[in-house]
Length: 509
Ligand SMILES: Cc1cc2nc3c(=O)[nH]c(=O)nc-3n(C[C@H](O)[C@H](O)[C@H](O)COP(=O)(O)OP(=O)(O)OC[C@H]3O[C@@H](n4cnc5c(N)ncnc54)[C@H](O)[C@@H]3O)c2cc1C
Ligand SMILES: NC(=O)c1ccc[n+]([C@@H]2O[C@H](COP(=O)([O-])OP(=O)(O)OC[C@H]3O[C@@H](n4cnc5c(N)ncnc54)[C@H](O)[C@@H]3O)[C@@H](O)[C@H]2O)c1
Image 1 (cartoon, rainbow, N blue to C red):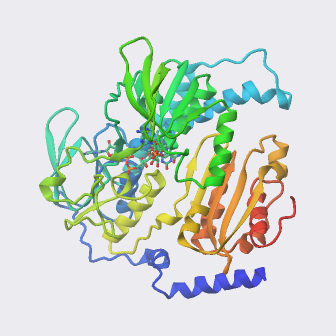
Image 2 (image 1 turned 60 degrees about the horizontal axis):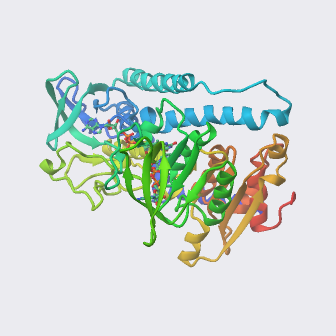
Image 3 (image 1 turned 180 degrees about the vertical axis):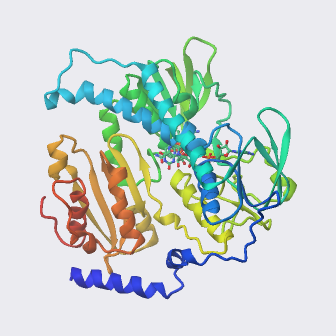
């Protein structure tokens, strides 16, 4: 059965090489670079100009240069890597790791027979390690630019025509950068809430929350999304009393409902408090402590809450301020995202957009995929990104990672489906290391057994999910995963067992 299933899959892969399937056109067309694309060496005009040096922009610039296109990248912040490297993914993961080590030392080491007379936090050292990681990585991208001959222009870029960007340099003065193709990769910024002014000291965005100089006694987090739960976890582990105020009836509203419930329980065990279906009406910073006035989301009696620090993490919005989009007529949607077609082209010929500034998940790896596909299209090749196959990970402890559809989404689509689950309590590696909180949940189409979604809560779910991403990308069935040999003892065996539970029965529960 399984072999038949694998063989079917192989056959379908071979067949699709000759089909019009975009994914395969993408992988097969890597050698078909159009020589007709004139390189402009000898003139000051670029083939590609990228505005913004974040994961979307810097990756697009490197890929364009690798494809032989004369490329310039313009970045205003004085360092490459964008939000992700400077004030996002990397510093938050550094602090999540450091604070997890402290939490483990306090609460778990003794269970493993490792004892200390005392454990304390050295916050400046913790911040120093984070800053070192960021500095190393951002400098590394400058090195990659040099290696790949990407021209790097520091300053604020503004369109003066669809093929010209004027750059206000950091030291004053400006230069005009010309390009046959211009890619907008200007990313996103914090979504401000009416009446709440961020000072990055007591009322902070994620940027301020990554650089607090003291551990707040009381931290109130507005928004139970990715940033709220990750940064809330950091400070909760370091000793803050954390209350998360969320407008919606649940945390991370996009997550599979069943996994979300377990996730919330796990965070509550870590002493994080949640006030769901609640909105912040006002924030008063006139006294020694910040006073928040709250109200049920549906309206009703008001209550108050005190905090030393308030983190505003209610989402991010596309960033296009000062770019001059109106000057060249680039269209945006009602929330300010630049509208593009499937080739990342805007309505203005020669102008493209990628990453957080366009619709789709606001994730670094999605921005990178956009960047590569966009320049491949520009170079006359085929590019391909499937947003349904973009994994999402919340890097708390345990982590929660998912790809594809949630059970709720499948139900709404009216598809007949099966669910297979396996708890980490029954996984030998998780038990051996005494870190067994979590579950794997697979949703598969009933008739074909094709996997539609995988949701994992586990200490290393962000690593485990990629087997599931590959499975979805190649249209695998749960039986395909179940009959694939997994090393023992590994956390990955939980995915195999969940797959067995989806099409038949698991062994170890
Ligand atoms: C706290 C936090 C944690 C995060 N953690 C993760 C994570 O773990 N995993 C994940 O996948 N995603 C994470 N994200 C999201 C991730 O950072 C973004 O999805 C990603 O950075 C988007 O990449 P981008 O290239 O589109 O934009 P950005 O990274 O925002 O880069 C855009 C760049 O363009 C520059 N720019 C803007 N306008 C101009 C202009 N006119 N001229 C010149 N330069 C300009 C900006 O200075 C910026 O450097 C996190 C975000 C935050 C805030
Ligand atoms: N691990 C990661 O990949 C990671 C980490 C951090 C950030 N990010 C990205 O950054 C983006 C921004 O993160 P985020 O956490 O700010 O946004 P988010 O969209 O993940 O969550 C925002 C939350 O705030 C709630 N909310 C909105 N308005 C509110 C209000 N007035 N009062 C109370 N709650 C309110 C929403 O219901 C939602 O749950 C995300 O889209 C995410 O993709 C990713």
